[in-house]
Length: 84
Image 1 (spheres, rainbow, N blue to C red):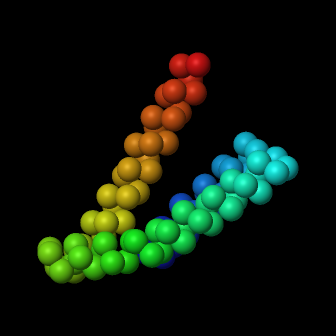
Image 2 (cartoon, rainbow, N blue to C red; image 1 turned 60 degrees about the horizontal axis):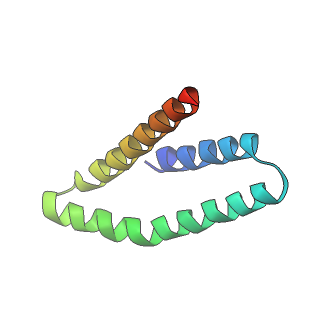
């Protein structure tokens, strides 16, 4: 599960680095770190609540759900870029 989370983070940073340079890249990296920290604060209690509600499958459900949201957002952005 950790590999999935860190793999997504690593690929997002690679994408950030390929699109931006200089001070915008530094600001983007800081925003990534801030959101990663916020996810680290909000994510575990949220997953814990879901695990209390539906049992041990709560954690995989949270991770799969968030990854699905990421994939849908990436597909949306890709289609918007192609259209413009």
